[in-house]
Length: 208
Image (cartoon, rainbow, N blue to C red; front, side, top):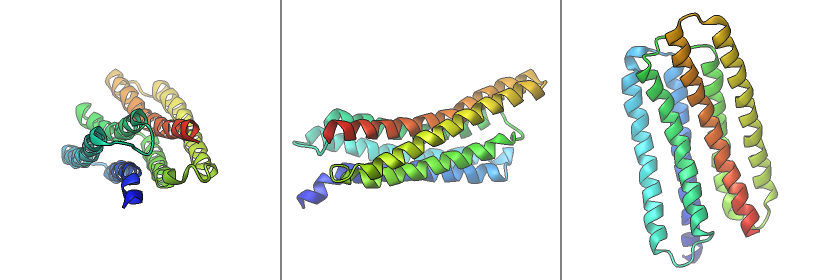
């Protein structure tokens, strides 16, 4: 029973990231056959996923308030929970932007970005599943953290090229403004994924 209790937070991290991955998959599916008429509906569906992720985070914090001896430091649990929550929030923000800016057609880089975000979330789930074993062999975790760092760099390169192409080819100033913001939101998803990986690395360093 004690071992099960000690794994509660690690399991909650995994569950939270499962919701982030669910949101990433849904975002990709919504944008594959993009229909502006369905954006508001999709936004509601993504918000429902984000709400479920929030419930996991709130339950984790509530338990932590009564915890006598958590498996890692309290502030690390809180920070990691918030980092994970930001991933799901940022994915919802992409669809929110599609609705707010009344995006009618997608630019070609969007598919590449949503695929990258989904791949990042899948690796983050692997990281969370491996986290309980970090004291035994942290090398597996580090390999996955490096993968996230590499994918975030891929996102940086995509962002630079997408912005260059936007300003080189788009003549409608409203479209330029809208897509500048949309690319920033897509890039933020990758950045928040890297924040989770970096926080996991800090936890390992402090507790090894």
